[in-house]
Image 1: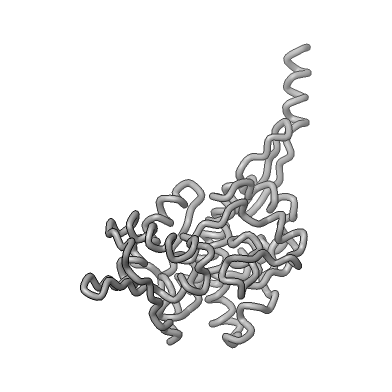
Image 2: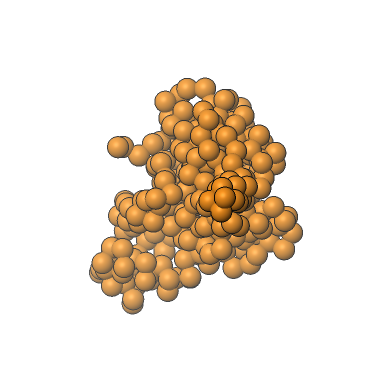
Length: 263
């Protein structure tokens, strides 16, 4: 009898929903929220369909009709949030540019991305969620005091400068698109950062000068200023540039769509 009661207690404590292709998408055991790996898989599937030029509409519908509670509870740590939203951002930029034919002036600001019944813009995802609601034009030093409740609840707890080496905006100076998974996100972001810095950084030992991608100027606060940039170069590129001047290279806005990282 006690065993039956215990079994009933456990079953009643579990809240389960069926997601894409019948996959369990959310569960809660005794108020302990578990990371929703199916949400992460959906974001990867969306990006994969973009890469292979297959229809994304079925996956879009699944994401659009998710419950907001499922989204909030399922992405319950920064690793899950970064993997999910980086994939979503990179997939949707390509969708908005190629299928929806959105112009560059509006592609970042229009709220056209429907997830869990809420419309998001690319700016909402990048600056609101992944950059912890930083004001877009503050170079990373000021929060957006007008960020809405949902953005605040979905946002990461801490800004990770490496996201700037993972988000692709369709320009030649952007990093290539890669698939990010919850289990490997930190290793993958380390690789993305190193690869991007190697390809984009120019060090002149005679002039004592370092030229880096303009992204690091636009969001310099995320990198902890020029001193932070020097520390990043020292750590990742194994080069001491303490006494070097930091300069920012012009950004190449020439279009480079479908720029996926070679496997």
